[in-house]
Length: 331
Figure 1 (cartoon, rainbow, N blue to C red):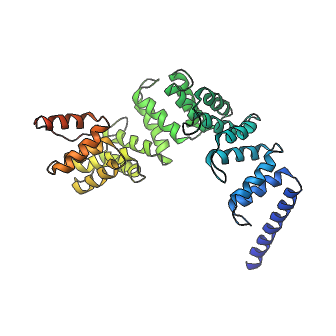
Figure 2 (figure 1 turned 120 degrees about the vertical axis):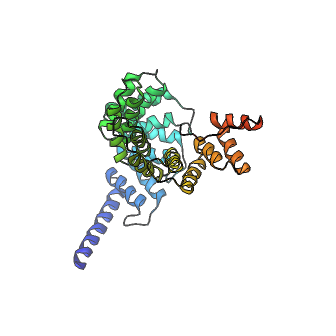
Figure 3 (figure 1 turned 180 degrees about the vertical axis):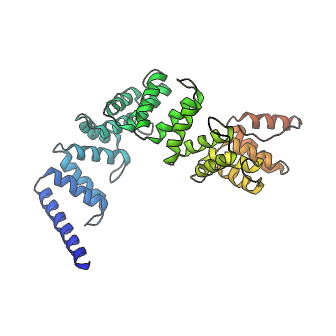
């Protein structure tokens, strides 16, 4: 076994040296691969600057994988400072060769509000290019653009078409959003069975929003047998991943004894987690639970009211005008 390991290590070292020699002699594929060695710290000390150097050498020889990787590095600020102009320059070279990952990332460059002024029409153009190449993430983004009217007119039929395309390829966010369309009758006739079908697919992949949505279906009996205990389990899966809406739902279950034994300490625990993330309903319900501690109540009610949460606004108005009326909110 020790000799076998030594042979493997020796072969890997020989391969690295061969790659390095070929890269120095101008072979573009070897230059790209040498960059990967340096980026990963494989057979050599990790060196992002050296990785960029070799990717640039390969990109200048028109290797599309190197152009894409170099553009992505500028987009993400890995090994170089973030530079959207350079990201667009190199991604465009790969995208023009019909390389779907580059087309998608180029769309993100135009979409991303943290870079230059967003250009949603150009974003849609490149998302569509990648989507037509069956790139699921681009299909999801294109669907969202049709939903929100970014770079295109709102079009529910196109939104559904592209969400379904991405969902059928296993994109969990598209699966959840397609489920939400069926759940709420957005662009399609309301169909709880289809909603649950797509929520379940996304939830099985760990999508926190879908897990919370599936919990709502079980809590209310939407096309599944009403099962508060199952609702709690799905809320918990999502809440433990840090999703504030699910944390608030789980807290309410503990507060009200829905699907689980009532436990005010657990209710406060989960409300606090959600409230600290800015969840207005959790902030309001914390205020309700702390009703007999005037400072805590007013603090959380004001936090919720500042976000426009109507029940909290009403509570503050009633307090200021001495109209006694307060109740927890589950919606």
